[in-house]
Image (cartoon, helix red, strand yellow):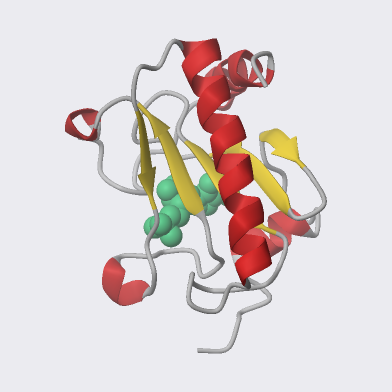
Length: 138
Ligand code: AMP
């Protein structure tokens, strides 16, 4: 499937719509999920345009994992998270809703992920407050 340059994460990368940013480097961006399934739910995306893991370059995949480690460590330190769940969906058939590769980095336990996926919008001020705690631990 051709990459959709108008998907919401492509717009975030171009600065056309805002995000609550946690971290950015040359190859990746990490930001808060606006419909979190647990407190501190973050997303890591590559700057490279790729819909799923299977179109992503090895270099971009490695860069994403380095940023995932950075964010997960900050969630552990800043939020006191004992466990970090990673989730990564490939294709609409798997439940992927945004067609730009991303890794969910979710503090807590798989047993806590009771909120429905991409359904409940969080309060922006609360998200920003949690983001500050993560950023402070990066
Ligand atoms: P997936 O279903 O794996 O494609 O996940 C997409 C994720 O993006 C969901 O968890 C949504 O809550 C999240 N999301 C959608 N739009 C935005 C946005 N504008 N900013 C941050 N997160 C978003």
